[in-house]
Image (cartoon, rainbow, N blue to C red; front, side):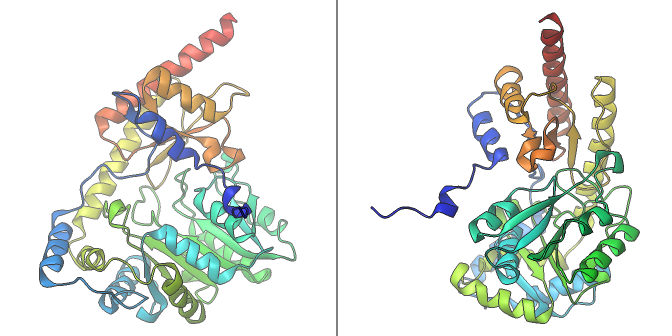
Length: 388
């Protein structure tokens, strides 16, 4: 038999999914590993989908998505982010992950380099491996609140560097980039003639800061990727979007045909109701994550596990491994011995060793009990290490 694709066969399993699959086999395990809102999709969005099914929205849409949904995205980002966007710059994707993949396909060739955060959602790096491109991590120092240093990024640029990947609010750290930092990062991209791929899926979940998109300052070189999964509790609906300069948008739309043809029509109608409908549900969920953030940080402090205080998204990075212990081993033991699932820090890059990610997108009861189990695991580990 002819060999399989080396790029595909060489992909390592996604570390978060591995923990999730293990936790599903443990009765009573508390799930704090997934970034999935525990809230149901708001009723008016569900009703819009039901109505769409009954009204006959059963056919293909244009590759770029329903024109009225593209217009709704443009209106929403104008209202929320101050971006002046035309509907033709918007493309609708089945989830933001497909938007990232499409943008990378449009911008990157085999052998090119993409600057990625040293702690970042792993799927973008996985797709670069499939493309035969190279991810070059840039540091996110904990002492800087996991914020990048523009000068250190500039020093990593080489002759094949083509894209700077940004993520604010950030997964897994919850860091939110202040406007001054965003401006400085844009200047790095300009100085080295880089495209900017800006992952803004958590833009509506910000607590103590304001979200600022690099597209405000460099729309001609920025591709924004976002979607409805997090803000509207619509993970399973699979609705994402990209906003790109016209020449990039035209190429991304063409890529839709061989990749997916078009996004689910009924889900697009539901997304239209989400974007154009009442936004109080978004604020209510954001405020709930805010309360959970505050209580979780306070509880961890009392349990002897200080955590970085995130300004957005719904994650906590917690130092919860012993020195030298791989975070994957620690996460596996927490599942099997304490019945709590967290994401190993190494799932987000080697810089994540020594840390685990805790999702705040769980009920307050599960979050509190899960953090106690995590602390109990660490207390037991420390005691064993001391006695040994």
